[in-house]
Image (cartoon, rainbow, N blue to C red; front, side, top):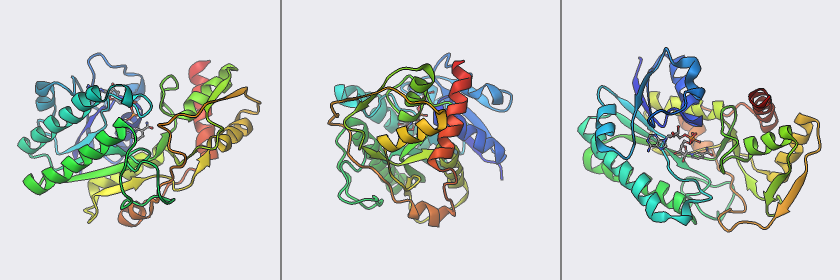
Length: 311
Ligand SMILES: NC(=O)c1ccc[n+]([C@@H]2O[C@H](COP(=O)([O-])OP(=O)(O)OC[C@H]3O[C@@H](n4cnc5c(N)ncnc54)[C@H](O)[C@@H]3O)[C@@H](O)[C@H]2O)c1
C-alpha cells in the first residue's frame, strides 16, 4: 500500500536517491529542505513529489511539514564528522535540540514511524573488533557521533514513553552519483573529481585507513524496506560489510580512470578511526536485503557521472 513519506533533507545526496526508490515502489513523497535549496538532485522527479521549503530548526516549519504524513525519514544534519568537534555547542543546538523538537511534533502528529539515518562510522568510536556488530559498545570520539548516538537514545525513550515507532540505520560510507565532491564527507567523489581534473589527491595518513563503502542505490533499497516489515530489532548497521583501505580505493580508481593520479600523503587526523567495517547480518536476515554493487562497479558508475557533470 502506498505510504505518505516525508524526507527531511530530501534534496541532498541520500535523500534524493531515497525519493527515487520510494517513488519506484509507489509511495507518496514529500521533500523538506532549506529555503531555495538547489533542485539539481531532484529535477527529474519534480512533477512527482511535493516540496516544502523550510528550516529544520524552526518549530513552525516542522509542524507544518508533518501534516498528513505517516512515515518520516530524518536525514538532516548541520555538521560533518571531520569538523563537528570545532563547535559542539552548535552541533547540540542545531542537530540534537531540533531533533527533540521534531520528535515532540512527531508524537503530536501521530507519525507511524520515524526512520533515522545514524552513522556507523562514528557511533562506535575505535572498534574493539571487526566487523562491528550492533551490540558493540558505543564510544564516539567526535561530536557528530555523540549527537547521532544521543538522538538514537532519545528515539528509544520516545518509543517507550509515547509509543513512537522508529528504526535507526547506522550507515557506513555511502558513495555514488550526486554526492557532492566539494565537501569533506565522501572520499570517492572527492578523489574522482581530482583525478578527472588532473589535480593532486591529498590523503590524511599513510592510506591504510579502512572503511566500508556502500553504493547509494543499495543503501536506499534497504531504507525503503524499513517501511514494509515489522522487525524485532530497531537499530541496524547498513553497510557493504567489507573493508577497503584508501590505497585500495585509489588502486581501483587508477584502473577505472586509466590514469596515474598524483597523490600526497599528509599527517593523519585524530578524528579518523583506523578501521571501520560493519557487520550487516542483522539487516540481511531482518529485511532479506543484500548489497549488490561491489566497489569497482560502484566507482565506475560514479566516475561516469562526475565526468559528465564536470565536462
Ligand atoms: N554521506 C555520508 O557519508 C553519510 C554517512 C552516514 C550518515 N549520513 C547522514 O545521512 C544524512 C544525509 O546525508 P547526505 O550525505 O545526504 O547529506 P546532504 O548534505 O547531501 O543532504 C542533507 C540535506 O539536508 C538539508 N538540510 C540541512 N540543514 C537543514 C535545515 N536546517 N533545514 C532543512 N534542510 C536542511 C540540506 O540542504 C541537504 O539537502 C545526514 O544526517 C548524514 O549525517 C551521511
